[in-house]
Picture (cartoon, rainbow, N blue to C red):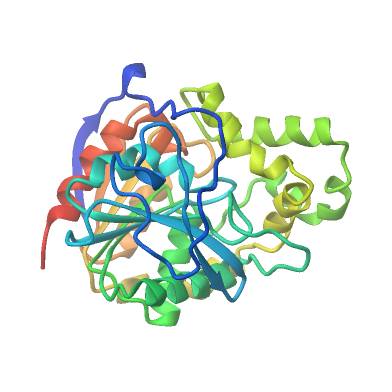
Length: 322
């Protein structure tokens, strides 16, 4: 384990306050094109965040887009729960000049398909990620994964043979135990909470999402993250994804972290109240040669609390070759 003890500080001026509260999903292209490149539309536009491509996965339609030139080294950003690719917007745009950045909404999240009976478990998400990498034709991309995305990326690599050039884990769900009492309560009573009146459900979701930030989310960012869960399809989907996930999905792989033979960087917000920062050193110790960067003043949703500092940690790691 290699640790960089230098503190990374955040200022309000660097918060990723978003690009408006409209939710445009862009044009559908089932063939999977390159999407919008930086500054020219699609996910890379300056006025909105749109995923303008689709992929039919084993767990439903996935929406995705790219930023940057296809000639650049590929990088894939994986979000967690209960978020969407939108939380990666500032980091993705910052990386686009040097990487061909791929962003996507997990099935059952954001602008991707939500439906009754959908398998959105971490097991399914790991399989879908492997499918998506194959669809994109990416053999060894750099992968950056947050929260549940960390478990998804690890499962795809360890259980489904997905190969990465390097892997950055940002406040990941990777070590037992995890799942707060509130999380377990929601998951155990998904059908009951799924029948809450709309205004009560919206208030619950917004409070839950807000608690992931230490510095406080900008209203526009909170709107974009919370609103997909407040539609007719979104309300049951919110509780479905909680009910389907439990610790067994990390238990299946936790004992194999010592097998990782690729460069790994772990980034963690020091004010994370969802997954304590003590887990950062524990995870780094379990992965041979892993680097560790602590981001001062950031909560669990580091992308919103300290996007510039997170990008500063990720960029040199992703720029390394071999």
